[in-house]
Length: 179
Image (cartoon, rainbow, N blue to C red; front, side, top):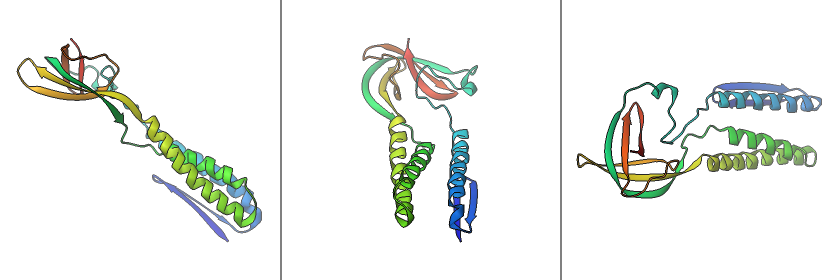
């Protein structure tokens, strides 16, 4: 008898195999478990942006503070999404497991399935991390009141040294926009 257990972010499923004849059903069961887990992960995904021109619904129609200043420095940066959803790892693991399962038979097939799932999960996670990167700018602004502020945001609006800008803050992230 073999017991298969899948748990991911609160989703828990298990299946007991009483004979080798049930193995094809187990494959289907694992596919269903992977889809359910993926749906749970996707349900928690949010549209995150470090753009100066993107506001969330909760940030709309809220008063914000605007300060005027002059850009004294601009440095290119990479913005990395620090909240991985796990979709890449799950999808990569599922695809790797399916690919590994197509190799050989018996114990070799089982090892290839596990190895493929592990390698696929690692590859999927790496792809997701690469996809979670955006080009950005670290913008240093000397405000008209004499204070200096530094804001990191996506490089979606051209900003250059000497340019007059607005530093917008309040409900949500601080943004730098042309004045």
